Structures are given as structure tokens and as C-alpha cells.
Amino acid sequence: MTDPAALLEIDSVTFGFPERPDFLHPVRLTVRTGEVWGIIGPNGAGKSTLLRLMAGLIRPKSGQIRFRGRGLDAIPPRERARRIAFLPQNPPREVALTVRQVVAMGRYPHRQLGLFESVDDLRIADRAMEATLTAEFADRTLSTLSGGEAQRVHISAALAQEPELLLLDEPTSALDLYHQLSILSKLAGLAEAGGLAVVVVTHDLNLAARYCSRLALMSAGCTVAVGNPADVLIPERLEPVYGVRMSIVRTGEGREWIMPLGPGPGGGGAA
Amino acid sequence: MKQLTRRSYVRRLALGGLLVAAVVAISPGIGNQASSVGVVEAWRSFARRGERPAPPIAYQIGFRLRMPRTLLALEAGITLALCGAVFQTLFRNALATPYTLGIASGGSLGALLAIRWDLAVAFLGVSAVTWSAFIGSLAVIAIVFLFTRGTRRLTTNELLLAGVTLGMFCSAMMMLVTSLSSVRQTFEIIRWMMGSLDTIGNLQWTSNLPLLVPAWIVLVAMARPLNQYVLGEDLAATRGVNVLRLQLICILFASLATAAIVAICGPIGFVGLVVPHVTALLFGRDCRILLPMSALLGGVFLAVCDWISQAAMSWAGALTGQSLGVVVLPIGVVTAVVGVPIFLVLLHRRAV
Image (cartoon, rainbow over all chains, first blue to last red; front, top):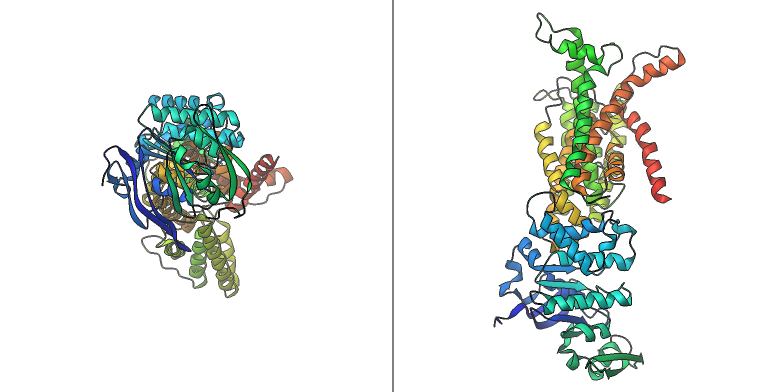
């Protein structure tokens, strides 16, 4: 069934590696424009695999992924690149290109011919750098930046791609507290303003609680829980998945605050 | 490095183009020291090239011997430096050269076989040694492509290992062929292995342009996708680059162009390793500028090295007050003597 409001539909998708043929059990979820999705779960749960499936980097073993009702496979790579941007977990840092160059390269799918970025491209790149507070070192070489600074540059490049769907694999892992909050609130703001949906893989449950409108909790290749943060972030769901005893507090703004208390009896990742 | 704009791009390329043009312009006046024809005299004779029964000697020396040799040096330098820059980018390896996939070793083995069995037949005006070298290189390229067949993802490290191993195998076979050769053949083999810009027979620098020019154009046109590739294969793929196709196109065209040069000039070293590094230091690693500038500077570098190879012995003679005769140093010696110090200084600067 095609949902008319849906941007990306994951319909009973499975995936396997040669050495683990039944890695991902049927996943079903629908990403709509304006939503910020958080994919959470312990190491090796299949979060990145799910994100790579959404990006079209790998193909489902069975099931279907549809983007605006069209099969993801049927969209030509260039067109797909104009609609879906992806940021891998560890994008390279040892790149001898300037920050502005790296961000402007996000415009690649929009410019078929011609060697140079247009004035428009550079304006969009500048705006993307301002959004991630990287404009101040626009002329520095990427390889001279710190890990967190480089991560923000790569996020800028993904923004400069002006996608309808933005897929980010642990985009805040190297960021300090200030930039974690400023980047995620920026992304959430862009999504809320319309025209964009964001999917973030993250280990930070509190950031997920604060900024995601929908969550998918994964464990051992299964989506154990899908829904609103209030429904997913409850001890009965999180504790067995993470193997950690937790206390969850509701803050004054109606957000969940997750406090890990210590390792549970089951050990990490037991589900 | 500043953002690459149309203006800075055109200015840099114009600089490289001017250097190449300058090399071509003075080439009739520089070269074989046995004759003292200078630049001015050579160009003056150019106006009298239609004289009967024969054009002036200065014209013949300047425009039939020296300039074609320099043009061959230019085309070889352009090809080797461009392919070196492409391979260094593609394999993410600073030590990659046009010969990394074993193309030069395959070509050399082919040439050695032709020398060992005294193949003297020329085909289409091209000597058997050249043909055999070209076929040897093509065989290596074919094996490399067989190796990549059926993969959806090309692991560049495995490809590098396969290429290096192939090269080692060819080197071992070269030892075998050399050990089975006569003294005269061994001498010829060693000379061939040094690389040379002496045009063999009536083979002209224009003969492999139909292969080289399309290869140059295709490789330089890969600059933008190659820039994306530098950011990682996943990122490039999600930006619409067909990564496998990019890799195969680069390997195919760079290999064919290298094979076409090795067949004529032998394995001239260091151009393909050093020039891309020097270019990156001067103009940055943006492939849009790195690839064409490496090509232009590579051409100029090899042409100048060739002049040095022809003049070095008479300079040495002038210094020592003895006549050392007219000896042309092997081009591979000069590129190494000039190139190795530059490379070591660069490596040192990077390490500091």
C-alpha cells in the first residue's frame, strides 16, 4: 500500500551478508517529510545497515524500499543523489581540499556539466557552512581541522546537497556539547520548516529524546520498537536491549531524560 | 589553497601552456651538442625550408631531429605524469605510479623477448620490439581486467597487490630471458630498460597520438568524479558517481596510454611519481587543477631532462677540460638524478 504522505517507505526489507545471510529481519517503517527519525540500539544491531539500505548503497535481500512511491532501484543515481544525501560514519579527514571546496562538492549531483561551481552553488555552500558554524574556517584545509570540525564540514556538504531526505550516521559522535545541540536543533528546524526529512543513527539517547520526532529501536537485526519517543524510551524496552539498568525521568518540557544506572545482569546487547 | 575559480583555473593552465609552448619554441635550438645550431639560427632557417635541392642543414637539425624528439618527450611526460596523478588518486597511495599495475614490466618483458629472438620485422613502420612491448603491456592490462571481472566493488588494495605481483612475475621472467641472451642482446636489453627518447626507425611522435589524445581527454574529464572519490566510495556513490565505472575507465585509459609510451620509450622512471607530487604542492590536490597541471608540468620536466641528458657530457667536458665525446645520457638517469632529490625533499617536508 502506498502512503501518499510518505517520503521513504521500507516495506518488509531484509538483508544479509555472505557470512550472516539473515542479518536484518523484516523492517517496516515509513519516513514522512518533516520528521526527524532516530535509529537507536547497541553496537551491531543493524542501524548502519538500515541507513545504507535507505541510501541505496546496498540492496535489500527481499522486500521493497520506495521513495515517493518509486522503487529506490528505479531512480537513476544522479536523480537519487539530488533527493537523498548520506553521510557515512567516518568520512575521511585526510583530504587536502579546502572546507569551502568540500562543502561545494555537495552540489555535484545538481551540476551535470561545467568544471566550476556556479554563483548559486557557492551561495548555497556558504549558507550550509553558516548553518554548521564552519564558515569561519572556510579557507582552511580539511586535514588541518579537528575531528569535530571536520564532522561539521561533512554535515555542511550534505546540507549543500539540498536533499529531501538526509541520512546521517552518528553525525554528532565527535561534536562538543554546544555543537551537538546547535546542529541537531538546526536539522530539526529545517525538517519542521518542511521540505526535508532527517534520519539519524545515534548512540546518544538523550539527544534522540530531545530532537527526534520518531524513533526506531534496533537489536540484533530486528526493529524492536518503532514510534514516538515517549513510547520507545521506556525502561521495559531499553533495558533488555542495551543490557543496562536505566532510570527515565520526565523533564518539565515533557521530554524524557535517560539516566543509565549500571550494567544489567544480562550483559551488553543481549536481546 | 583558495577556492578554484574559473579565473584562477584559466590563469594556471595558461601558465602551464606557456611553459609547454616555450619548450617547443626553443627546442630547435637545443639538443645534440655535435652541432652548434642555435635557436635563432634554427628559426631563421625555418623560412628557407622550401629550398631546393635540400633544406638548409640548420632546418634539418632543428626541425627534423630536435623538435620531434622534444615533442616525443612532451607527449611521454604528459602521459606519465597524468597517469601517475590518476593512479595516486585512484589507489589513494602516494607511491603509485603509471607502472604500479605492472604495465611497464609487461612491456619490458615483451621488448626483451623480441630482442632475445632478434625479431627484426617491422609492421606498419613500427619495429617488432615496439610491437612486442605494446603487446606485453596489453597482456598485463588484460590480466588485471580479468582479475576485476565480476566484482561489483573494486578493492583497490587487492588490485594494487595483484598488479605489483604481476610486475614481479614479469621481472623474474625478464631475468630468465636475459640469462638466456648473448652478450650483444644483453647490452641491447640493458639499454632498452634505461628508457630512451631516440625515435626508433621512422616512428614519429605523431604515431600514437590517436591513442594518447583521447586518453588524455577522458582522464582529465574524470576530475570532478575523482574529487568525489577522494571523499570515499560511499559518499561518491550517494552523490551519483558510478564508482566502479569510474575506476575501470581510469584504469583502462591510463593503462593504455602508459603502454603506448612504454612501447616507444621504454620504462622512463620518476616522471609519473614525482611530477604529480610537485604539482600538488604548488597547485593543490583539487583534481580539476592537479590532473591538467601534472600533465603540462610532466611534459616540460621530461623535455628539460632530455636536453640535460644530451648536454650533460659536454658540460662535464667543459668543466674538466677534457673532451668526453658526444654521449647522450640515458633519460632514466637524468629523471632520477633530478627527480629523486625533489621527491626526498618533499617527503622530508611532509614528515616534519
